[in-house]
Image (cartoon, rainbow, N blue to C red; front, side):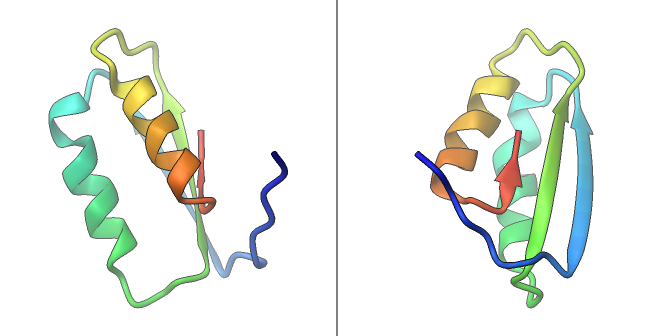
Length: 67
């Protein structure tokens, strides 16, 4: 499935490692900002607590998130 995204006005980098406890809150806080045209580059630093899967699931629903 090919996703198209409007050209981003802002690129955010979000490295994470074993952050499953705070990922949803963090992603929700970013999503409600007034700037709508952004891309979030989520970088998993070898997590083993399900963080990567959590971000992948969110990225499926929100094309601004790139895992």
